[in-house]
Amino acid sequence: MKLSIEVEIQPEEIPLATELLKFLRSLTQQFGVSAPVVKNAKTLLTGIVAKLADPSYLDQAALDIHSILRNTSLGTRESIFDELVKVFLEVAFNQEHIFKGGSVVPYLRLIPKLEESYRQRMRDKVISTIMQVLVLKRPVGARREEFFLYAEAFAGMVLLEYISFDGAATLIGKLLNNPDNRAAGLTVLGKTTELCCPQLISQCEGESLDQLRKAVQAITHKNFKFDIAYICSRMHWSHPLLTTNGKAEQDMLQPPPPPMPQQTLDPSHTHSASLDQNLMPGLSLSTPPTSLTPVTSWQGHKDQIYAMCHDPLTKKLVTGGKEGVCVVWSEEGRMEQKVPMPDHYICALDMHPRRRLLFAVGVCSDKGKREPPCIALFSQDKSWQRMGLITRPGNSLISCVRAVFNSGSDGFATGEEVSSSPQMEERVCYYDLASASDLSDIQPEVHFSGHGDLVTCVTSTPLHPMMLFSGSRDQGIRIWDRRTGNSAGILGAEVMGKIVAHDQMVTWVDVGGTDLVSSGGDGCVAHWDLRKISNAATGCPPLQRVKIGGQPEMLLKVAAYGAPRSGLVAVAELGSLHLVDLNNPTDNIFPALKFPDGQGRRYFDLKWSDDLLYASSEKTVDVYQLC
Image 1 (cartoon, one colour):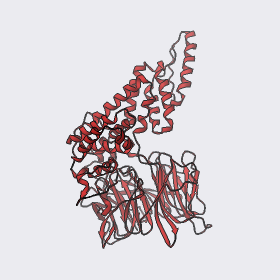
Image 2 (cartoon, helix red, strand yellow; image 1 turned 90 degrees about the vertical axis):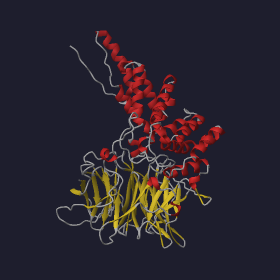
Image 3 (cartoon, helix red, strand yellow; image 1 turned 60 degrees about the horizontal axis):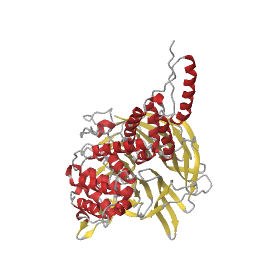
């Protein structure tokens, strides 16, 4: 009789499992039977490497990998190491990191933790993989999602000193001097100056640095102005593209990372499948979406639903509004939990996917006691337990909140109205969670003033991780640089001496991939390409303005983030819902189909989840399907 037993082991159980297997082997030898064998090293390694996204797991991951490499029941050490290399490259360079605002650098920090005999081989394999991708021929306007993680990995290897600073300068210079590699070269240099600019300046030989500067200054194509401006601002270099009438422009925007990921790159091929086809497999490019079809309505609120947020990882939706309760919904529309915020309306919500924190902004309800505006923080991992309550007694209002979890960022931003003599001061504030010891006592790391009226919305993007974008009742959209504490520009066109994004108030600003879109009281959607904002100090007009409807009707909300295809946005008018295709210059507005009652509905908030759109109304969450 032959018995076959398969054991599934979690990464943290490896040391204990190894000891148990040794004990079982000693027992089985007495009876002449074979010892149990754990065959799935790949599964174990994948689980361990995936957890490296959390830096606090690094030391434990190194110990677990060390145990696996010495576990002969999983194979020879060489075969296990070969599997580790494959898993590491697959997980570390997964383009989902771009979508989630993640980074490849935490994975690279495993390399110094490996045994010396494996460390060098892993380093060489990673560098070889990086260079195979960076040296592929690409046009000037190449899609940066094809090589962004590899460019960041190059910078990370320089930071870890696995590539010398002189060697890095030489390699980057060669990329810049070859027109077919220039886009990759500038992205690599931008990330390198972001991660280790002081070391590059201080430790690189003068001749190597001078050659690198000359290679940058020789690039004059306007498509690269944005990258060059950032690099030169970091390295304190001048450049012909940045000089107008003898005066240097100051453009502090970050070099653009790629748009939303489209597929895992195969280094042996330069051709990429269409972004649209990969992110929306249910739709053919020859038949673009033309409508939003109502599917169902979720019941559970007793009053108006002002705000929603969606977690793309768990697919949970959280809604809140006038009754002062956050409702947590499953993907199927089941009400899972109610999270109360007594004495407050909930006017804004957002989710921090890395920390799995819910931010809920409360303003004093008219039936409760006079409480100052506040921001409550709830933990999704702890059954939505409240982890902190930030009260702002000097504020008359907190109008909006947005999680900021891009590379180098771990916090959230708000729009706040602060009581200051002789009038209210409108601020955009950034709170840093990484440095907070008490989530109830956290204060803004930096705040910006400049809007002339209420800040209605704030957002961020992985394309410019150190920037915040805010819209206001003053009709403007401003860009704020967290590194300098100052405004980095204004989006819009000059009207009667004032730069405005809309003819009336800006109601919302959202980002989807490389698209920044805004809605306004003038009934228009404005659209900018974040890769082409080169100098917004004197205003940057939108690429296009899309008028919704014949008569000017206020647009309450626009949603681009999470849409299944680049260029698709949903727009809520006062009594109707529309789909807009920004990629189509004509016939690009599609009214949503109505529910069976035929009534128009006013939606306060919109959120995409793949090809579903959630829309919050008076008391229901309406669900639409993209068709």
